[in-house]
Image (tube, rainbow, N blue to C red; front, side, top):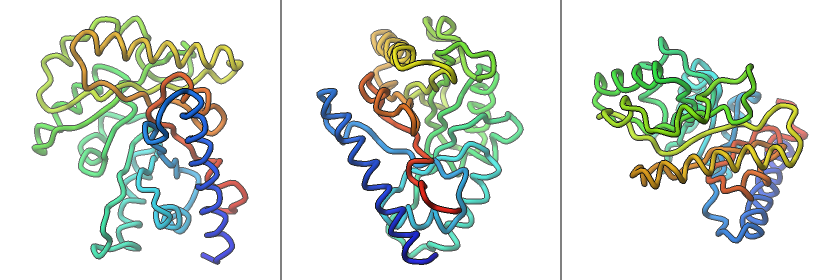
Length: 241
């Protein structure tokens, strides 16, 4: 990749990081309380490698197949001599027939959107001898086109999660409504925060993460308590991938 494009990615990353820090401070929080998940689904491996070289180690993919492919491609470009492996996050829908292949490659699954999927993850995790960290996806906007639990389905902790031995619920993920205005977006994110707080009061003290906010609304999400923001287009603005 030519130098100009690498410099643009580095500049975009610095801008996004500054916006995250500013939003956190305005909310009375430390900037380190918000983690950037760089969404790489629309760019190629050279752009991903450039971002990784700038120190962005949390990478998010929507499709399991893309995560498989890009994991291998990045390993080929950045072999064992590297000090750190990237942390791959699956942020999109995970079909049950792709769970077993995806789990060993994934640092965190953001999109556990049904008890059937949770059960499959629990079973597959036991087969590979790992404990899997995941977030429960919640359809806070109640958009029929979106995946996820309805908020009322998680007011009580399901027995399937209480009995799970091979997974840990680390928190919740949500997207704002496609047509929501700013006030609605904040209300939707606040609903997810309230659900997280309810779970913690119920004894799930480790379920602290809130993955919410993307390029167009992440500052609103931080104001409502986001601990992870999933940003793609703002990082690759001006890059012809």
